[in-house]
Length: 525
Image (cartoon, rainbow, N blue to C red; front, side, top):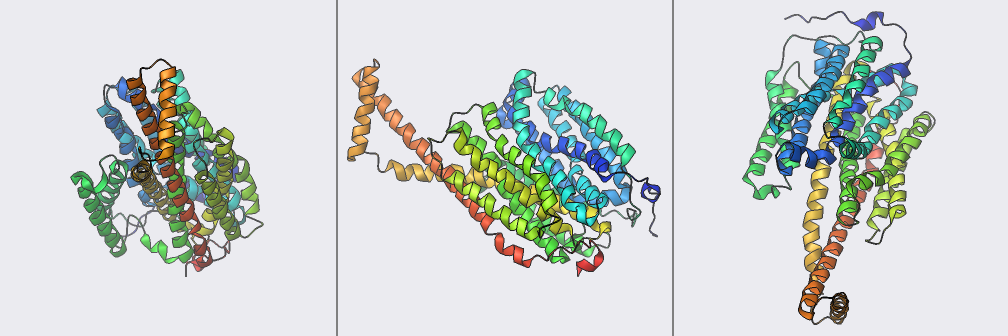
């Protein structure tokens, strides 16, 4: 069947400041990224309000992530089929409407259904905004564009827990969803007024690769559920997780084979022929692994071992957002003056240093001991996101940008899921290992252990306990001390591993080509 096309607004698009375009697309994107974390702290309230357990309520998060991950890689194809502006407006409007429905949900089942719709409509916002920004700015201005984009992608997940905790405590968990309404309306109106399709966004064929869509949905969906529920179900000791692993492996393998053979694929994997792009996508996957892994790790550490309430733990994470917020505009300017790969190397090293600083802390750490490594990490995120995005997309021609940004964002999200699953597993397993090692040294034959036990027993007697009760309390206190130290060591292990993973990326920079700011097909060879 002959290729068809539809009228595109880009052919008669008026001259609009790229910064107006940037604000138009980032409103919806910031709202969507914020929503991935803002709900987390509200889960206990949602569970209680809807008469369900917290474990059941976690499907509110999982359902969103699964739907989001399935739509992400299809965004480029959807844009070519229906027009980028149309897809953007439907995404923002659908996300806003489903947010309101989530807030009105009468029970858990309906909330999960509305979250699936919310995840599906929000899945395309990140790659769409990135593709539009990369095209709206000239090649030499892409550093500034990506700095603005990164502000939303990096800062929003850090603001989410704080904002979600405050709204839930002050009002109701339902307002976590209702606050999207005014932002969504503004984003829809601005997209209507200021976003236009470029001439090369056109339908290549009426053929729809339903097999590709099916393999993608099954493979990505199974992988996301497996990573989200793995630690909870003790990984491969669970039949459910083993089945999901097999389904994910078969589904994704079939998807890759299908997309490489079919004439009009849903996701064009041939873009990986550009070596710099392929390396950049891999590095972004690792960046998602470390960024989101540490984002989960620090609040858990602060709440479980350092005694921080949930809201204060959220506030403690703000230095990272502050570092990114202050330094991202600077990095946007520096990208035009300094070779981006050098900035990327500085970001990798400084982020690793911040993680090693966290690994050097102990149970006596105060707020300012945590502040500095998180602030440095925030600066490092700017040095990572902006140059990495600029270098990765430099060899990609504009007509393939939507497809390329879809894959790029999908792999960052998959990396994030692997990172969260990995750090929670490391902490759980290593905590038990360290407890067994430390516990062997706390016995009646160890002088220091006997002295500590006796001091505790006397202290409990001084508080009014009888000798027998005081002895039991001393044993419990000693057990708790060993348990806390073992847990702290497990967090230290996780921080060391994340830092080492980052440093291991440095040699890959040598394989990436220096950006030529061409952005055309010549760079694809």
